[in-house]
Length: 328
Length: 263
Image (cartoon, rainbow over all chains, first blue to last red; front, side):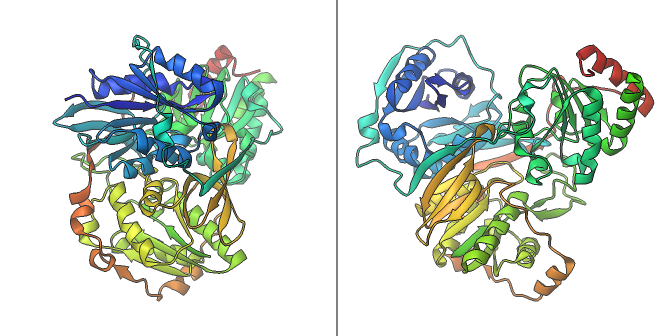
């Protein structure tokens, strides 16, 4: 029996996020006959344009429209979703910073199974979904089995399901606001104050054509000098992955990834970077990626065009010297 | 401020290359070096800094077997006041919900103002903190990269969102926060520091002590089960350059020139 499938729509400035159509593709893999309902929450005229947009690709759209959702926060939205979602539904949420805040608690409140960060679905048998996840930052994959017959909250990794553009919707928008706010507006114990914008650094890596990017494999702050020297020889800028910023060796503005900068260089050197999906998610515009890592199984080799299996601490100084010789 | 920090013992990502075992039932666990989950270590450091500013105590708790005791002790050497191990055969094979249910029982036994967890651990699920908060009906924030205690009723919290931006919240206590790496610089633990806490007793609480029914947790209660492990498909994969270092550099420089990688 087909279950109701819901997709939570992330949106910004009146436009639905790319994950919206990815969730349709995911729902299709969950159940080819599913009538997928988009759930859109927000305020003002923006939410209407989002609803109209997604109505073209979803069977139905549920709208929650109230001023307190002018900036949507998980603590305010979660109780509203619990009020409107039926028991035993399957709810798909993008596994991003918002989904991570919203979804685990939502599964508890709906008394539904929780399946986090799915990257693929391999069919449902007897109410049990077989899904693919990754562990150890993508070093190994696992099959997990979840009994979704009595409801599930599933977070889906952004970019994992190829958006299905052929799907056409019926454009039926249903206003669920009254039910969502029945009994009062929730979230009084967690009050959103403001967004603090990222600090602007000395170099804008989003504008660089050549990025020499360094990760955990550099081992020590003193070794960063060789990265700067290579970048100088190549005429590029230095960027990095998260552990380098966590260690305070480079400023946050140089971090590539979903929580840092989205970059679109022509050439991207990933040096001692394992290639977690959060990092790779910051690479756009199909750069030519060269990965150097001593671990031949590092996930970065799956996204790189060219790979070199070596210790960057040995390889980089030789490379820099050769490039400098070349340039005379 | 009474703070409880939930920690997990995991294979150390900086010390191990993770592979699948021969029959695909697990990762290969022989010769793995274990440590405290990196995110949890930042959470403990944050708790210690809050206590040092405002007083109170920091308790570190872990759900696991007797081997998990070593990470609890390590975090005590860092400066946590107390350690607790939640251990029972019935807990084995718990999914995220099971772990959250066990921790909920412990939280209800105490008088905590603030619960910290790491944002995620080795399985990348990022689930226990949010579930724990929902079970307790306490407010929750994930990906926390800033905490400032306003008074004994509320705190100011920063969350890391996309593009290096940050959401700021004011949250009432008690609450649950999942900590992101980079929020602080965790202190180094010396051998001497560990020696100082070797003889301290770490109480062990079982399912019975906690009033947790064994069938609701562990393998019996798990609704999401890992059935096998496999190495990811290589996909298109990178063209791996081979040969001597000199030959590799020759090839690489040609490629860099062709692709505009040398200015």
